[in-house]
Length: 154
Image 1 (cartoon, rainbow, N blue to C red):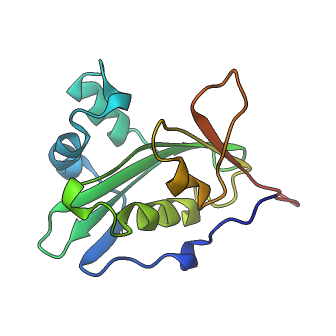
Image 2 (spheres, rainbow, N blue to C red):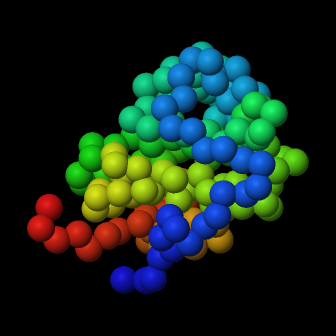
């Protein structure tokens, strides 16, 4: 199994606060962040909002002034499988470690940390996810990346 980064390996960038349990108050800013993303093409704004509100875990990164600068969510059964969706960072905060902090926060969450297999789909962020031990799946699954854990005794 490849070495993967632990949550403690990533610092929260200065001026950023990570928050678990986002709710309907974060929907407008999240929708604005996700506007035009390739993975939500053809999905209505209402469906994207409902998907976030129905997630097992929905986290955000907020700047000191209170604005949302990043968001990510997970669907998880808490034991066998979890799917990470909609990892997004506002363009002016990209490259400063916000996505890494969000991913570390998600992977350390109780609904995710003991799950055997964590999946996500990406066309363009393989380097980010590889830092956490994700690897590309063999065909025919396509642009999916998988983090498989050897968890014994659970």
